Image 1: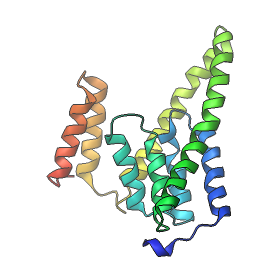
Image 2 (image 1 turned 90 degrees about the vertical axis):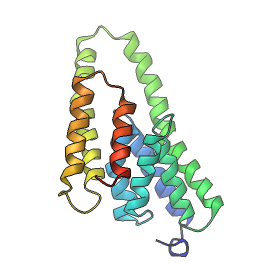
Image 3 (image 1 turned 30 degrees about the vertical axis):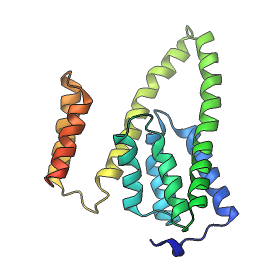
Length: 192
């Protein structure tokens, strides 16, 4: 996708803002859990990002120190920059970040206050326990989208590395940075 190919009007920016507002309310377990729908909206439906830009946004934000929600800013940046304007890139960052942070922050604050006051109720405890499988399923969907982005699921070294990393993270006390470093080294050596 080259810069002159993408022209966004105010209705497009409002559509992007509205989509991220909705995703903000669905981001149970963190914003990363809504990335499959972001991919559908930005890459497949509107073609505002390439699959490579989408994957790079997530990979860079996950590798960088700080909150992993930064991938949302990178996606907004790419959408704006694909129009050929740095001002549009900054607008993309502002639109996506404000939309993803505002509703979930307000809702989380209100729900946390209410939940703290009612923490002894049986159904509040049941709800908290029931959300764990939902979060895990959303994370698996994200892994599937990112793992199959190359167009094939036949990349057995990548899947083997993923399974080994998950097993090591679960069964050992190894620091996650060692696993990330090993994955980066294997990628640099082009083994995965």
